[in-house]
Image (cartoon, rainbow, N blue to C red; front, side, top):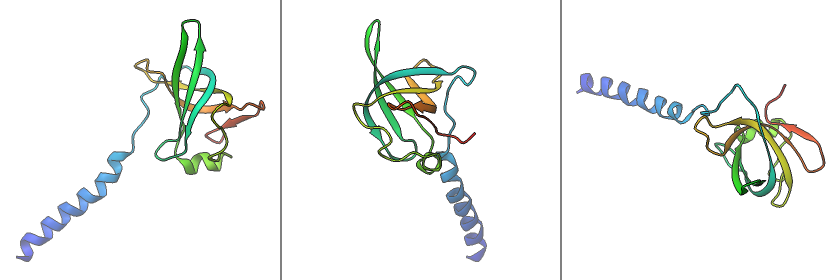
Length: 124
């Protein structure tokens, strides 16, 4: 019986260790060109794994919704962010990298707040 339990336990332990690793992923973005998106904050969801800002952007064709995502909350907090940094109604400029498939989703690098301050999500 012990001969069977040791390999079974080993396999289960390895699987348990691998499951959290599969949750980590990279953003599918074009990292060779920054994009700038300016609009009105509709929502700021302060949650892991990525806080997300929903912006309404005015274009020549009309209004578009863009999602701007940051890194984990602890990384954003380390760079001065809080859950009240941006609020619905704020006009902000998000600067980051757009999804490679053209979706209106940006991996945020920095933001220009309504008062003109620039706030990064990664330390320089």
